[in-house]
Image 1 (cartoon, helix red, strand yellow):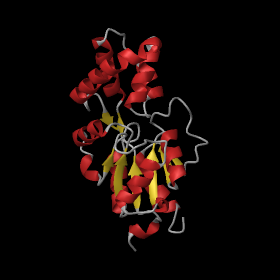
Image 2 (tube, helix red, strand yellow):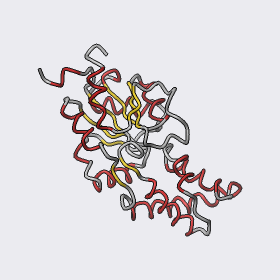
Image 3 (cartoon, helix red, strand yellow):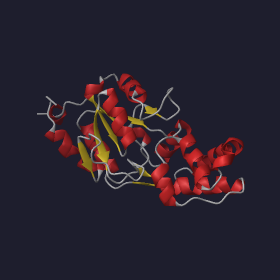
Image 4 (cartoon, helix red, strand yellow):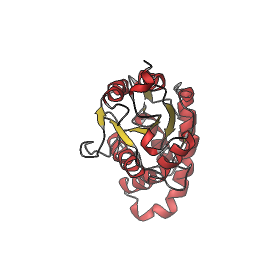
Length: 232
């Protein structure tokens, strides 16, 4: 019997930062350089880990608050944004690494016949080069960023639009992420969700988010697919 028949899902929607790739080093380098350009001190990696995941504009706004410039966000944001965009594109992927088990986990999903899409809150102009640099782009059909739709995760719209692009219903799609953003977006859209423990969940635990499973590595996904049969 084909392994394809062991799972109810026809597609998987996979997050990027903190799920497939450890990108804190890229964020630290790009933000530090951008802050230096406008005369502000860098932020530490712990702050970045607590803050990433809700899109670049949220990250930079919170960064200005963190360095004591909360009263100057309006005049400083645009120059910081421009510097950050330039610096991130310059170093994208240089200080990041693919988590152990990711390549094998994606292969397990493909071997079961699932269609794969990448859905991230990272701007698409950052996401696509990163996937290419890490040899992951060919694992996916559609790739969508935080600026691909009118709203980003945790709003369910990106999940619903990604399901439509994959040609599946939300019930047929398994979301794979690392944070409450992924859990909330998938839950509101009607997708089951699996979370990875090594990611960035704003410093909060993953328990209580309604995930079907919390995994330490993506290559543990096969056991989840086997456990949840065609009836769901």
